[in-house]
Length: 378
Ligand code: SF4
Ligand code: FES
Image (cartoon, rainbow, N blue to C red; front, top):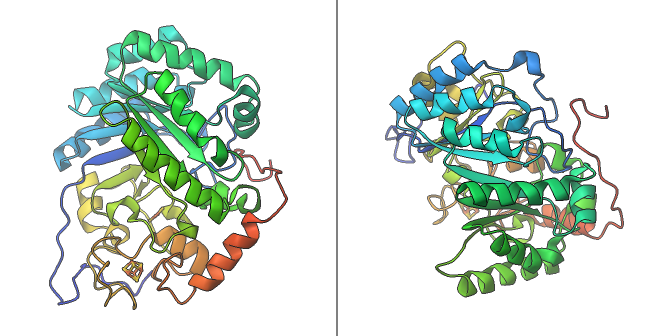
């Protein structure tokens, strides 16, 4: 991405200065006992030997707090795959960050969860892959996952953590969304994040098996709207819609380099979890540069700040400060160019093509899944 300006600007040529990020995603490992076919990790995963140490993470958390970050989402892979997770968590707590643990619930015993409580975890986000054992185990590629997750959810509420359920929806489970919301309520969740599969990384390999139909997308929207009314004051519902069937794209990351950043297991700093799918973009690492310098000065973060980088029709569109031209990784995946208008936008010249491809994938009879593995096809 050599021809993008190092200094981001708006369309009037004024320099754009980044604000402080609010949240950081700390992917402490790519190792995971599950093999979800829509995993947001990159297809090329970092092995254990390349992971940052707890001391590295403690420094990164201090730098994040100094930069203005308020909360850290400790994620993976499965963060519980790290035996030193409590030490990592303590580093975040000592830096004064609010610590959210994002977990599959597999491989963390009750005793370990209590240890993580003492170390500083303040909120737990548990992923569910289905509303019954057969579906949960098939999608996660992990027999017995359902029983372990249900036990884990009980421990979360018994210990007293606030609980969020993370439910990824796709063609093979979207019709069960009402039951998923009921299940989250029964488990005592205060929030459920219903996210339609984002077709980057591993999910892109599974488009034909997971792409929802237009009717399913409309159904999910209605279910979420109804449930928000019914559960007002009891449970919050966040929703990432199926934007292949929408008119406008999502404001991915709230705008590139504007509110959050991701640090991968080996210390690479990314503007979003899928940014490494952008060909030609180089990323910096906390092993060589401070987080503050990377946030403010790196070419990767500055690439899509402001509005001057935008193509038409975004430049003259009234939504350019609403959705920021959509998702850069989706533009890369669908248009082959991260600078393009997100092709799911109805104003994109590629929109019809993208919709036709999504409809064809949604109509595919295949249910076979390509599971996430440490090596592609391995
Ligand atoms: Fe968003 Fe660009 Fe589409 Fe306008 S043209 S709605 S700014 S993606
Ligand atoms: Fe990277 Fe949307 S996932 S910008």
